[in-house]
View: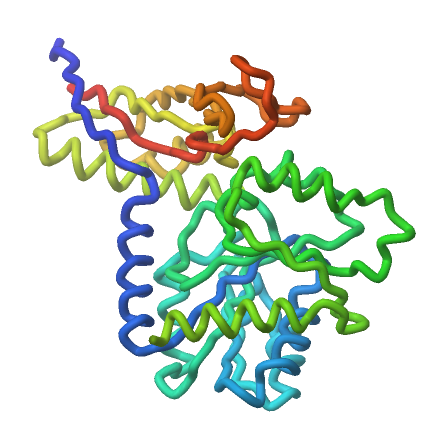
Length: 222
Length: 116
């Protein structure tokens, strides 16, 4: 009987993806293309938030959108109607995008003449949080009907994002959603995060979000 | 949900490392996993068995060590550990303050392999 040997590895399971993501981030920095990774649950209003963002920034910046979905082209078609360059990425059943898939999307979209690309990640709050896509900034949307307790249930996502868009504030009177409680919960996990309260339906709150984004894009490109 | 993709990473890292070290078989993989990680050990082990069946890791045992979430207190700088963060309010175990900052709990690492 051979003796059992122990080999120390001490390596992150995500190390290879993290390395690829860093490489993509460096490339995008060189090419002066800002990539925003937008994550949320299904139905929180990702596509509507993107459409409002196009409304605010589309005339000032050259934008592109990559819509990741398990299998459909509905979102990319909706975005393309605004005249914005858009492609659909099919993840082939996968619940998240990794850096390799994101880079293929960047190549397919042909981003060299763009200032800014939004990646609409697959709708879920678990898996996309684990995989660095190579984005310049990571942002999530939480909508009012989902509840203010979500940071307790999906702490990884809330701890990793640079900004949180609280969408559908127009329906706040109909739900027991406590925005102060949300802020308190999030701050413990992520003290530097920016929080924007918006309604993609009415357009409320989008100036502040657009200003933040414009500033981040400017910092990235200069 | 994403256990399969993660297990593929682990299998690749483990087999590569074991072969470089002249292993005939991998007996056990020791993993440490932060409480914030979305991985469920039971499903992870099932996926691993499925993808490892034609490799030197086919009879492997995955051992998961759970790492707590660690917070540091803004008021008194001491550290508090929580196995579960859905208990509210989260407070500093030394001074009771609620002003805490997360310092760890998100990691997922392969610590070591047991090989023959």
